Image 1 (cartoon, rainbow, N blue to C red):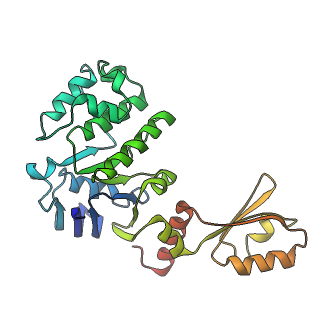
Image 2 (image 1 turned 180 degrees about the vertical axis):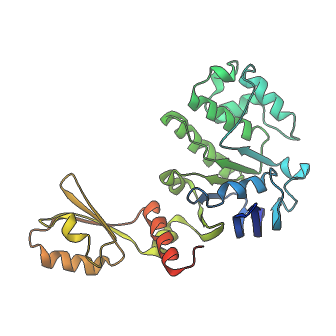
Image 3 (image 1 turned 90 degrees about the vertical axis):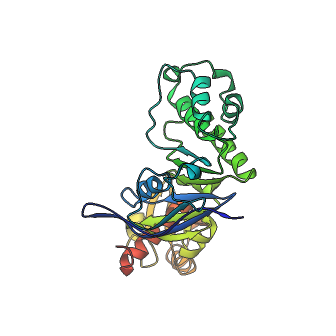
Amino acid sequence: MGVVASWQSVEHRYGSVRALNGFSLQIEAGQIVGLLGPNGAGKSTAIKLLVGLLRCQQGRVALFDRPPHEREARRALGAMLQVTALPDTLNLIEQLRLFASCYDNPLSPGDALEQVGLADLGERRYAALSGGQQRRAQLALALVGNPRLLVLDEPTTGMDLASRQAFRQTLQRARERGCAVLLASHDLPEVESLADRVALIGGGRVLADDTPAQIRARVGVRRIRCRSTLSAAQLKDWAEVQQVHAENGHLHLLTQQAEALLRRLLAADSQLSDLEVRGADLEQALETLQLDLAQSGEQR
């Protein structure tokens, strides 16, 4: 499908602080790639390098096979960053016309507003919008250039339910027309529902890059829910138990040794009931992966 963006062995420092440490990743057309990691992992630095706000110190960053600071590369890029300053006195149509003038083949302002569910608010000033509507307006500004790559940094922060639903639909439509999406977010259920691939960052490098399902399978974590006469305090020191807590009369356990734990539970509690075993969600899988890497000395 073609690579639209890439980082190759990128190193970046802020003084003595190393933000990226051999960071390598690529994004292909028509893919939604989730970028996940704790605060300070290097996500924002990687994004700033890609959109041309920082210059690469070591390694190579490419946007459509060009340096990101070149104007021709950015003509096919749409970005929605965490902090966006816009003129409060312009209405949405005026804002979008201003942004569209920077691109060769932009959408009409009306089309961009339609895509984010704000078609009836084109005459409203940006300052008069609610927080969720402002974030949707920012997404419309990222879309109006008809980009081949969308870069979204915590895009749903401040969005209400209706705005989040419109956001998901917009991203699905963008992917269907071949647009690539880089989605950096702390909303793991959202990333899991949208992303084709997930890149987990820690210590300035990519620790895992795979589909959400494969990352869950890689760590082999299972969730067990049951009713038991045993307490969470009794189970927390069992070798097979990674995490345990009680909630609404049920025990909730995380384990990488599901079969062994089930046998031990059944042997220890003849009244065990309401038993359910499921795969871990993405958040639990990523936590386990980070812990395993830290314990093995791989995460620096």
